[in-house]
Image (cartoon, rainbow, N blue to C red; front, side, top):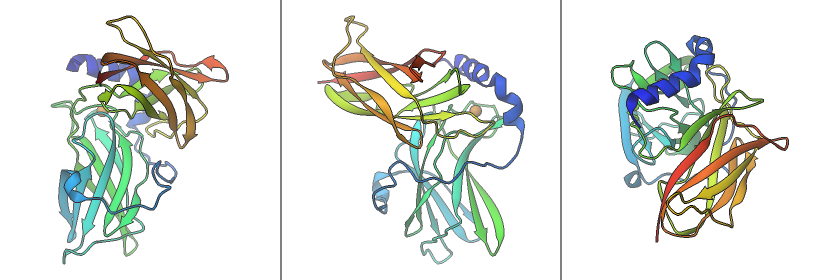
Length: 282
Ligand SMILES: [Cu+2]
């Protein structure tokens, strides 16, 4: 997407709440367990992760890793902390969240408070609701907070966030929850056939993005080049903490789109069209 168009869309999306974003009150999102937090957390395999950023602060080394190179999508972000001797640093007070500083304003994005995995590793999911804009403020940072000897420190690590090749995070006005963000967790390319599909929905409350339950995400598939859809899709239902799960069926290879409607109390609630592109291979 062309950059000025992206900036414009962003500013339109945010114009109603500019005053709220400009305020600097502390993040107040409540603690909650991650979507994949039910199973016992495992120490990640460092070689399978992408190194994103690192810094040293008061003798502690902070290294940020992610599931992929960061773009404006939903990502799982890991932090590894080591002490002066190179030993894992485990802390029950450690927390982190994303924030973008655009110069004239700051805003966050949907995120889950990190889970301590042990061995100095932490894992949390977050959504970068927009890509970096060159020459417009310092951009995205991961703010890590840590309490040592009763004193709270905040460490900011710069996160480069590029523009996603395929848009996976959309926003829409709604009847009851004003502007909401809907992240589709599907990859850009998938194999022909039936696939589970997950979404994360968040509403915007000042500069926080709390998870949003209580909707039914109606799904329709369309293959524009051939003018048909597919059967066997299952609307996505809330599974808690803003996550929704359904099923999509792509009956042949090629370019498809997933058309989404947000339903609440038996009525369509989204005011903007929501459509995701997906490329299907044999
Ligand atoms: Cu921004």
